[in-house]
Length: 50
Image (cartoon, rainbow, N blue to C red; front, side):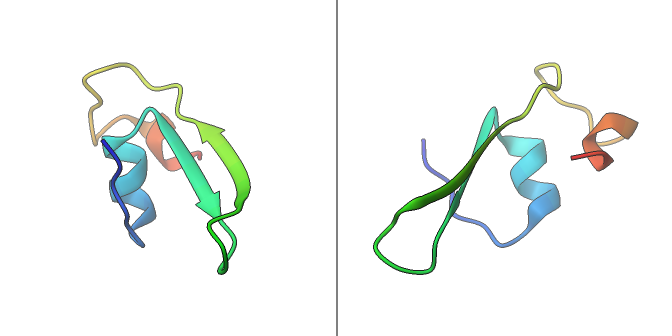
């Protein structure tokens, strides 16, 4: 599933991997692996470290 979001907290909470795109042409700028346990807990302090 691909989720497009401008909400960083939501992206971290819902994702296993976050892909940051350049503003044009859909080119990957950065790929970030989210290393939190599944299912993720919003109260996990590690979710705020990313």
